Image (cartoon, rainbow, N blue to C red; front, side, top):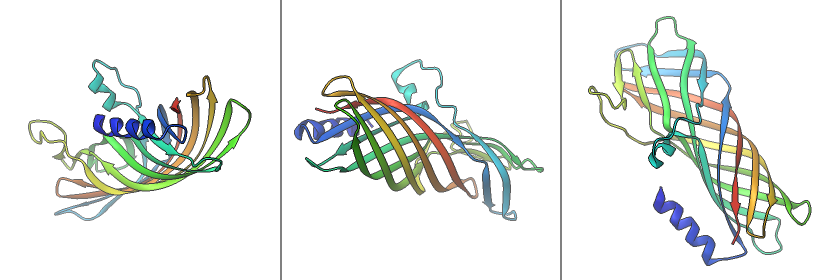
Length: 229
């Protein structure tokens, strides 16, 4: 991740005036959905009305603990005198299973905390409100990458326990977003950012002996900083 950040910053510096770099944190609220479980030796099981939590900010004891938080970063390019722009963005969201219609209790633990990640390619439209303020409309899509930790019917995967000490990332689906962002420039190169967006994602994550599929519909609120060399 650090190499990726350095690459984005290098791009921004190399093309001053047309590029910007943004970093933000925030939270998301996910609508209840269906978790469809397919596991070897059992009938396919849909669990309805699954409730998820984001838990965006956990106690930080070191720089590495930031991986346990909600965050996003993006690099943007807008051609001179153009209202349209282009972006690459990484969103690190989180999803913790809280409850669902699961009378047999087959899901003992299910989380995408390392996380529920989406890489977006975005198209933007920018309106200059005044000399210091901008409004940015954004749409994008890209692959979803997850790191699941699950216990389903007593079978563990990715739990970092003695039974399964591993932690694995998988390309598990797709995501898309629509959003609007307000920017207020404190200086020519630094702005405060406030953003609201709707994010859709479909993921099919591995579990021990099968897979589980979920569709997320979520509303996100982000706050951050925008740097424009």
